Length: 250
Image (tube, rainbow, N blue to C red; front, side):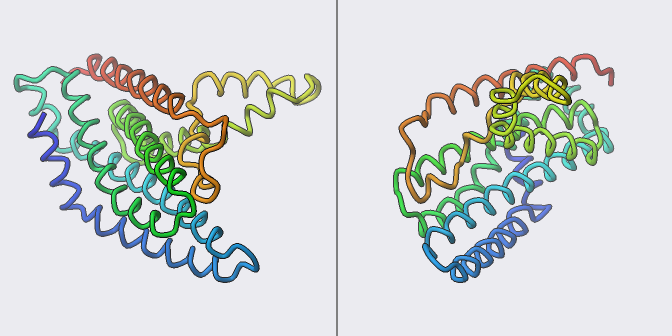
């Protein structure tokens, strides 16, 4: 486990993931400050909302791309075969790599959280935002591991994980469709489809809400729900990756 964590971290350093992502975050924050200053009212609030949203998107996309190409290299160099030929089960292999990518996500999120804390207007909301950002990254990392192991190629794995993330972020939209639309016309298909998506995809729209940075958590927000979703979906996705890896013959 420790060797795998070290290998993933060294790979992230070799690929200059930290430097590249921090540079993009710096550009995103600079753009957020510019847009905030251009606002007519609530300049500080506008700045922190843009900064939080940009930082979250950059972090997630950076993790997805890094994981997809890292796992593809494992297959292309046949390193995955060398690793699995040792005294390590395929289940431990999946958990170890998820833990390594999750650790990279935490290290990447740390300076982002520090920067957001400088702009926040609600300390409690900033703590909620930072905590849920870490939980969200755990879920995305788990799906990226599943997609990378299953598809074996970086490009389809990136597309699949980004699609999963976008669907999760649009869950409030799908819930609105299934809750208030009449069953006629195109809604005959759209409503059941949105309900199916709601059953399969986590409510990522509840994580890292930028409004928390300004107004703090609301009365209906629950950290327990976020933690429960994280545990449930990470467990399911890792088991799915384990099942797929056990079917592969090396």
